[in-house]
Image (cartoon, rainbow, N blue to C red; front, side):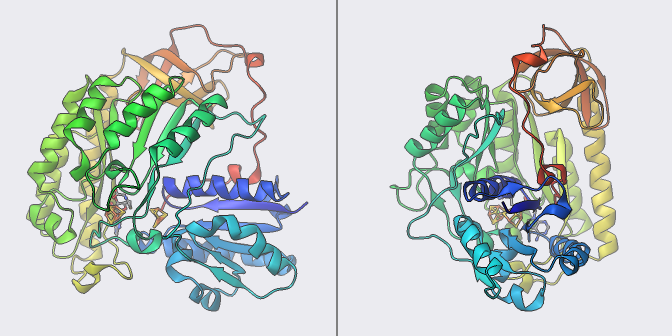
Length: 470
Ligand code: SAH
Ligand code: SF4
Ligand code: F3S
């Protein structure tokens, strides 16, 4: 039986795709390699959102070169956004790569790998399914219960933010019907899933595929329908929303639906109107702030997280100050910030990348200083309060603790007495300590004994390798 290993880079779409790649391989008789050196197939699921991500693949392939020399029939497949971006060209400049597969071609992976294993030449398949879009569906594996799952509601992106390669690597927007989305969620819930994260590049622009391109968002309706038709769900998250589709209906849904957590990750990218215009983000600082405030007021103790790019072409100190002002004004609970990185095929390539590397580094550090202070103040303010923790599993660093997420998405470590296992449960707990990026809490209720749960899934080698966020 051939054995595989997957190395995942990039965003949650890629984490979802990697799980689907695993399933496609299981269905064709593969098993997960328990030790990396036992693998017959290694899949690199790549990201190309920043230049650093490209470099990561090269250095990763470098570390595996020796293995391939020792085991010449080991197959290397490259999936994800770099695969889509480079297509066949990747085969000529990365000599170790045997298969290049785009995000829309994942079901074809086992056949392509078979061809190569049978002695065929290296092969690339990166074709978008624009005419008849299909959506990869999570399969519940008996004996492998999981508390959380991703469900795609739309794929691709028509926004064209000027810095971003994603519209090129993921293609045009394609939407999935509410009936299909709800049916998938019901199957997942029946299999024990209690938290769903809806996925899409502009997830909250969702409307029925039968409606014309550019129709108004009906995302809030979708959330309401899921809440009604999947009552077993404990949490319904979504990523990534675009600020221009935070409608009044969506804000109202947050106020009314308990299943929506009191937290949204709402990328802003910059606080300067001049830069936002050059980025083609299609909102001004004041529009963003107005939407952010509406969400923050929808529910008590609502928090927002965001993405920010520093050093976009022509960004001045005054533009950057506008970003810092906005960050303080919103009071984000966490900030993901990146230095601008020029990407192929993007409109911003026509602009000079004129903010020096030193200045980008300096601005990033200043931004993190403000963000860290906000985060630590926020976490401190929660000490003594009650949180609802959806437990994801045992803590990686301490065997007496379990880790989960609060209703606002803070990471919470839970003290669990020996012989108990609250994985997949929603546990009421009291926060006893705030760390730099997480909370420590003590349960306020009895915990289920370990034996009450089916055995935890056998961890395979690909699960043991870290997900590398670019
Ligand atoms: N669809 C999502 C995010 C896509 S990429 C959205 O619109 O929110 C994830 C993040 O990477 C972006 O939010 C942006 O902050 C960052 N990013 C994208 N392109 C970049 C580039 N060229 N340089 C630096 N950061 C970039
Ligand atoms: Fe990229 Fe903008 Fe689309 Fe997000 S909305 S994927 S940042 S083009
Ligand atoms: Fe995600 Fe990176 Fe592609 S952020 S969509 S894997 S370019």
